[in-house]
Length: 399
Image 1: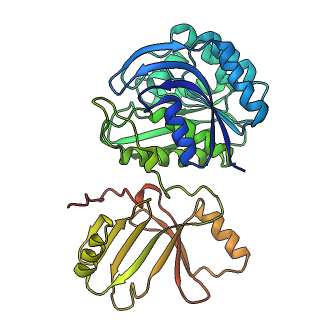
Image 2: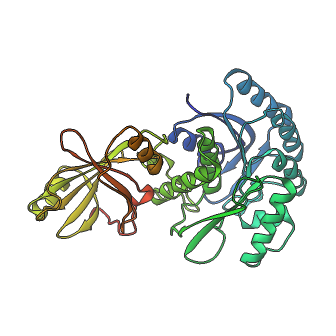
């Protein structure tokens, strides 16, 4: 069944954050987005010019209308509009037992504009108590916990205290931190879950940061609706956000919108079924093959002369050439990306399928396993995430 995701958030007229970013995210991840709009904003990449809060009874009416008819598999809460709305929404959602709820405690827009007053922030405590996960950035963590966040130890103590007091998992987003690495930390309260986990990745340079928090929380909610664990949902959502930041078009004159529409064939929607998105063929003359496929209209994204080149096609599939060596790259290799490679391999082995090699973590950031079909064709099952289309060595097509 298509995951049904209810988004309770404000509208962003610039399309970079809020309801608009959430709908794009849910759609690209294969879900059906439903909305309860809490506020209408007049904003763009440079700032917020006006905010009109939607009355709490209208917000509740939107929730009741879609839940009563369509149903809901997960909920994302963003900008809430007012303290009264926050309390009313919390009471209504408390009735939905077993539905995962991801709360992004929006207080300030990327441009710096305030999107929640003190009374509304105070009411966030009630929303946290019904949420499965709350996703504050560092300034929001300080406001919610009332504690210092001057260093890593203080941040950890603050998040741990907040999670324990509200009995809600807390994902502290590290984008406001310093350094070339961005680290997000998860603090859990479930007795059967690790108390703390973290994910780190190189910081992505650029101004296309409008809507990152909205997109992350909407993606986590969508993945939870597909029965991924909380840790798995966060990892997949982080990959979605990073890929969407990589190909942003640079719209506007401030903090621009991301490119959710560019996350194509990058995150397998299924835990079990492999997804085709890459093939490699041998080349006897590297230069001739590279020239041919560029003439064909493919966008070159990797050049490792004189042995390997990768291209991107319209729609997001990738294609590679590899110089044919004695005993290596002698035949085409078809690649299928897996949502969970280890789960896929366990299933195949249980069905009697022979795995020739792997899984192996490769130097180029892919985790791979090799096998052969009944006709002798070479197959690679793998996981790569952003490393397929956006490795650090990605080149511009005109390079």
